[in-house]
Image 1 (cartoon, rainbow, N blue to C red):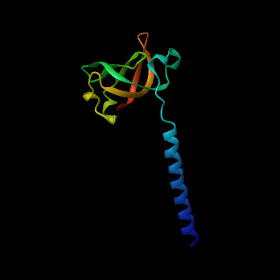
Image 2: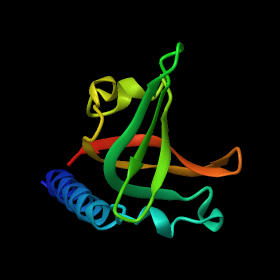
Image 3: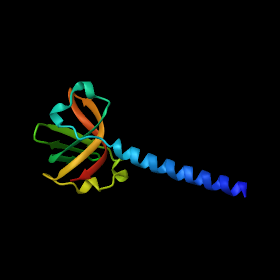
Length: 123
């Protein structure tokens, strides 16, 4: 009887731990940043921006390069072909002027800022 009680207690603790992790992860979701607030000091940080697609280019190697703009500024976004299949949406179906949110790492490329995306959502 003691072994059964220990198993039930362990199962209950595991379920409670999973619930705590689930709710904690919801609290840690990224806050949307206005594009004009991004600076060189933010390079290397994970950021989330939302806006309309202002330009779109698919390279020969199937990397996606596009710009998005919010009411404050615009920024370049890169989705590498190795990342595209892992996204919850098909990034190859994105269209000009479509509103999206992008989560990724802010980088500097050719003296400008860009985001290497690892999550894209339509709004």
